[in-house]
Image (cartoon, rainbow, N blue to C red; front, side, top):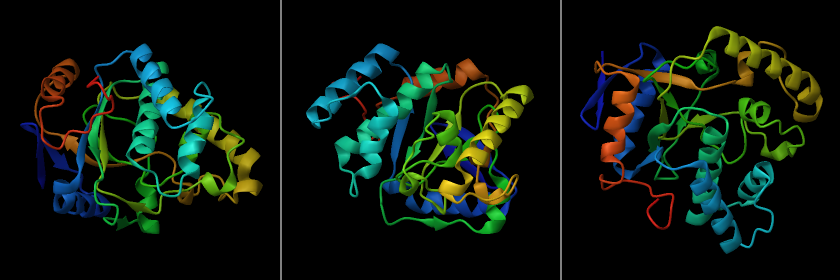
Amino acid sequence: MTTLSFNNLEWEVVDTLVAKRFAKFFKENEHSCKEIFFMGETETQIKDEITKLAFMLGIEDAEDMNKLHEVFADNVNPDEDHSRLNNLIHYHELVENGFPPRWGYMFGDPNAKMKLFPADYEHFTLTREFGTLYINYAHVGKHFAEIVFSNDFDIKKEQYRPQEYARPSFMCWLGNPLEEKDVREFKVRVEHARQILQERLDLPEKDDPALRVGYIPFARLKTSINNSELVNTLLKVKGKNKNYMELFDNGG
């Protein structure tokens, strides 16, 4: 089995073709990527940074997160500030909804892409396992699970983008495994949304993997460490690596 190492911690690559392809693809492009931490700030700090950045970008309404995300999605060539705003919106969503902190890598080279094939769609999942690395969504827009999660039923058709390729970008699930009942309940919401939006967004049929709901896991934590220890280990290195991505203009 292939092993990946980050911050003196080890992960074992999952035994699937798409996981092996992505692990190799990421290592080839790691030098251009940025390490990102959605942890260490309060909801108020994140919201204040969003408001400040929105004002700097000339955006009047900084309260509606779906509308803010729409501004980012409408920007054909997002610059550094628009990308930072997009990441802050997702950070705010995590904290506001009580999700665990997040750590991972964001892509650097915009030309680095790995095509996903129909056989890969079978590996998209809504389940989350502690310490597991998941391939990030790679497009400007929203995938279907994000539409459902944010109740964005008014999304513009062109902003719905099912994942067609991966970039050298991933996130680590730093919480407990999702309970089966929570996954079942979200699947009910997914099907309800699919029925409402199927015609307008040209969605596939029920249970078709082409809907690409969730994320693809590609590596599981190998180092023996519990949840709080892993988060504390990552917090200690936040901002210290040369490829760190800063989301706050005053350093958080």
